[in-house]
Length: 122
Image 1 (cartoon, rainbow, N blue to C red):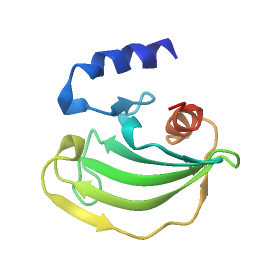
Image 2 (spheres, rainbow, N blue to C red):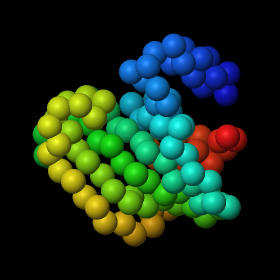
Image 3 (cartoon, rainbow, N blue to C red):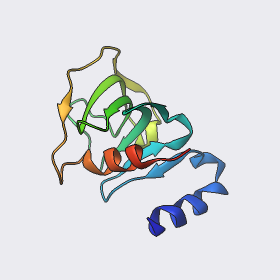
Image 4 (cartoon, one colour):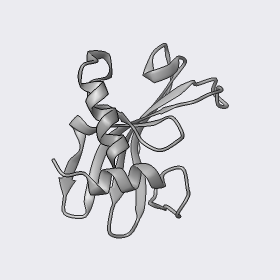
């Protein structure tokens, strides 16, 4: 938790990073300014910064995601895939449909953002 707070304090002075907090070891970011709380449900913008391009040649993805904190699951509400890092460059793919709920197992890529978002206190 100390590491997250220290990282958050580092980002406060950097307007280009406003709101984005890296969560976990994988380049997974959460925009804390967009966290919406409704009971056990949380909605938030996330950013995945990829080390190598995916099947669409995307180097990053910006995702509007919904977490069910009680059940430990998530679903994607919308997604854009970008040709550059940190949601820069051209938009390669846009999806605006809600996915099915996916349960998040311990150690999964999405487990760090789930824990962070669900423990967030505005």
